[in-house]
Image (tube, rainbow, N blue to C red):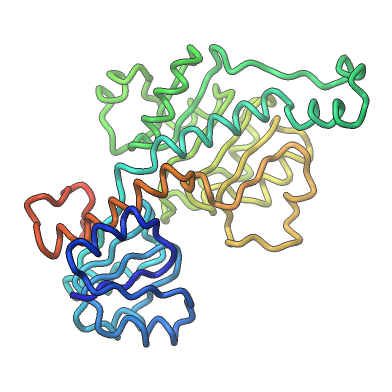
Length: 319
C-alpha cells in the first residue's frame, strides 16, 4: 500500500510505516497541481497544514484515510470525505501538554512584563526597575477556559498548581465532569465578567466565529489577559486591536490568526501589550514526535490492524 506524506513528519513516526513495508511518497511541494499528481494512487494521506479540497481528493480513487498531524481538520474537505466513505483521523492524545504550556508561558510573560524587564537590564538601565509598570501574579487569579477537551483540561491541571480559581464554558461537557476536575461550570457572560485570564480551546465554526468581539471587550476587566491558541477568527482582530490600543484590557497572546500567515501590515504588530507566535504552540520537539507516531499509527492500524485503532482518533463526519 502507498502512503502520501504531505509536509514534514518526524522520523519516529515514519519508522512505523517503513517497518510495515508501506510504500512512502514524501510530498514537499504543495501546489494543487503537484498534490493532484503526487497523490493520485495513494491509499492514505498523512497531512500537516496543506489544504485538501474536493478537486485534490477526487484525484485519489484509492484513498481510504486522511490522517491529520494534529487535532484540527479545517484544511480538509470533510463533505467529500463523508460522501466517499473516506476516514479522517487526528492525533487526539499528543498535543495537550505542549499547548497548555504555551498558554501558561503567554500568561506569565505578559503578567510579569518580562520583555520590559529584559530590555532595561540589557540597555544598561538596571536602576530604572522602579519605573516599570505594575506586574502581577497568576496566584489565585480567576481563569476562564473556553472549551474543555484534552487541551482545556491540561491547562486547568497546570493552573490549579497556581491555586487559581478556574471556571469553564463548554456546552458539550457535563457540569459534573467540570466540577470533578476542580473547576466551576459557568455561562459565557459570567466567565467573561469575572475573568483575569481567558484561554480559548474551541474549534472555529459558525457558532464560535467572532465569539469575542466588540461587545465582549466592553464587559471584560481592564486587567484581563486574553490568549488564543485554538483557531483564528474566534477573536475579532480589529476589536482586539482597539481594546489593546485603548488599554481596555491588559494584554493578549495569539498563536492563531484570521489569515495565516497574517499580513505584514497587521495593526496588532504595532502594539507592545501583545505576544504573537506563528501557530507553533504544538510544535515542541516532544510533541512533534508524539504527533508523528500517532498519525502514522492511525494509518497503520486503520489499514492493517483495526483492533488497535484508537476510536477517539476517528472523526465522526456525520456531525
